[in-house]
Length: 202
Image (tube, rainbow, N blue to C red; front, side, top):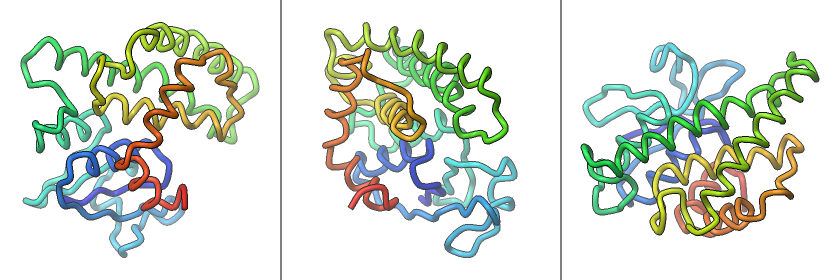
């Protein structure tokens, strides 16, 4: 399995998940300016959508979109506990979280990385994030992770996107539970390994 990634992007969640499984995998960095990979591949031939995460499976097929990639990785090592069993209510709860993170949190950070976004758009996104993170804060009041006592791929995804707050000047001060949550996840060996591999920490 090969993961195509961009350092610190949402593909970091998939990178973390791969380390959590302990399965063998390769990585190749997307160079955004050229749409080539560090390994010399034309990324647009691999994924015409032009963004990460993208994984190439052992049979050569390609899978894209973060929520799908995360669940695929988790299902390759069910005993890892990264995702509940398919068909269970718990699995639908995981999908609920992945959808919420993608549509309500991930996309709300997007304007902060867009040089053409107006201040009005950024203010609206900031206000939206405050409301959505307030909900996450309540969910973490009595649980160490989003799904309860166990770390899942939803936590990997949440960790990555909320950590973008450090790069865009979004204040997490009003959310102490989220801050504790991020610190708890940051020290996981898989998280450390993925971040080091992407050059995000030493």
